Structure formats: C-alpha cells, structure tokens
Length: 277
Image (tube, rainbow, N blue to C red; front, side, top):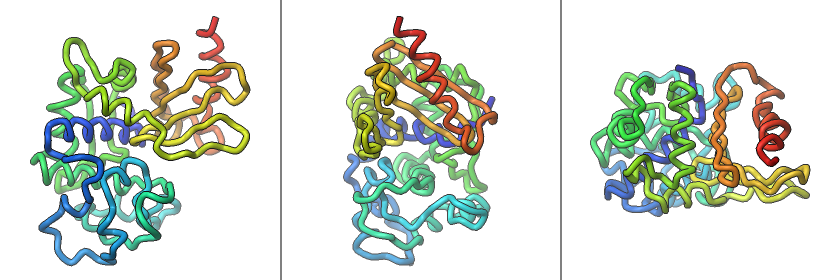
C-alpha cells in the first residue's frame, strides 16, 4: 500500500455523492452547521460561518481561516490533536463569505467524516468500506484517523496502485461497476464539472470541481483532451482521460518541490502523444 495524500479527497467526494443518493445528506446546499446541532459554544460564529454550505467544502470555498503552510499552521495543529478535529475546524475564524474565494482547505474535507458520522452513524472509513470499497473489491487498505475514530478524510488513505485506479475507472464509467451503480451518474458528472475557474491567462479553461481537479487541454496545443485528476502531495495522481478511455495512476515520493508536478508533465509529454496515434 502507499499513501494517497490528497488523492484521498476524491474518494471522500464519492462518499458525499453516495450519502446524498441515500438521503443521509439532503443536497449540496445544506448548511454545514446543520450537521452539528449538539455542538455548543462554537467560536467566531457569525453570519458567514452560519451560511457555509456543503458545496463550499467540496469546492474549497468555505471562507475559513485555514491553511497548511508551516509547522504551526492550522492544518498541522489539527493533525497533532488526538481528538476534537471537528470543533477545532468549526472554531476557526472566517476570512470572508463562503462560496466566493478558492482557498485550498483540507480541514473542511476532514470535517466531512464527522458529518457522515452524525447523519449515517459511520465515519468516512467505515462508510467507504460498506458503500465504496466492498463494491469495488478493495480489500487491502488503511484509512487513518484520530483516537475518536474520526477519519482523516482529506489525506489519510493508503491503497495499492491497482486499487487506487479503481476510483478512476469508476468515474470513467459514470459511477458504474459491473452491473451496479456505485456512485450516481449525475454526481460523477457534477463532480468533474468545473465549479471554480482557476484558468491561467492565455491558456484553456481549467479549475476545480467537487474535490477533483479539471485540467485544461494541452496548453502546447498538441491535443484537445480534458483531463480530470485527483492530486496529492509528493506526486500522487489519478488521471482520467475520457477521450482515450484511459486512467493513469502515479504513486510515489519521488516528486517533491518543483518536481511535484512531474507526473502531469509526463502525461502530456509522453503518455498522451503515444495514445493519440
């Protein structure tokens, strides 16, 4: 098995779609605080925090003052806590209204595990075991969490490369696996749609969906394929290329710093040119 880092987030996105289809979550417009009716004395509670929706977590636009830079960042402090991850995140101050600015935020994704627990009675790891891993035949896995059983839904999953590829294949097949619909087709398509425009000036459109990256067609102009990606630190990737009916998985700790995007370069420089002909 290998750490997936933030590729874990795309597995968590699938769980949200399943939870909505089963009626445990109402829809993406549900207010986040509605999942925590018994949590008392939430700090920095204001109108912005009260308005935060499930969709704001899925699109990294919660407006929460939460970042991952530095040893004393909110994210590293959360990771060191043995319990209380949900309260720590919900107590954070707000930087602005939800749904406006993209700010990469693993804390909100980690919170989704508590939201599953409060509605479905299972944290993300247990929920995934029943409704995602078992249907996909994923038997060897580890999804770490804290002492309370709260799953690290933003980056704690460990799988083999072959089992990691199953999520890509599931989404390539519109959520179907064998004869069953594991993730609703509508959720797959909505997840891979560009909800946040992160386009670089002078290049084709690219952005962020529901915990999935939407990569623009080759900026060099050599192809027109859209690529959908789950992306994790140190070079963990799932690439989905529907035009070529293709899924590519890269796992490893080889790519750090400036080289962390090397798998994307390999995709565009080597793999896609090979399958275009």
